[in-house]
Image (cartoon, rainbow, N blue to C red; front, side, top):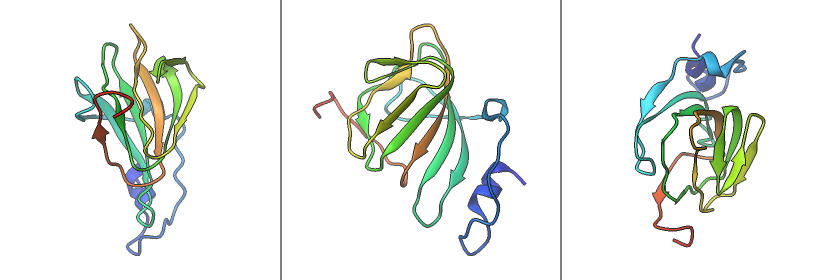
Length: 136
């Protein structure tokens, strides 16, 4: 069973099995493009709750990736597992944690010269609004 198959569960939308991954850094990732970033980055869905829309991912930004200010309607949490990330100006290394309440302006990108891998947890369905500045 793949991670996504386990995460989505059975035909009735109920989660039927736990999702357990020994090393999220070893999972194969796919390229994703989002308008808040100047280049594609890599990700893999770990979990999706069909009832609430919550989504969990492992994400890898390559060194040099640049972000624009943006926000999401759902709250979202980042836990850095490898490399270095800068979240709203705050540098974070492995074990670093950032939580953004829904609607909060954010800018997160790899620290200068570093790749960064992190777990990304959305409390609801993914959406994205690119902003010109943290004030809108």
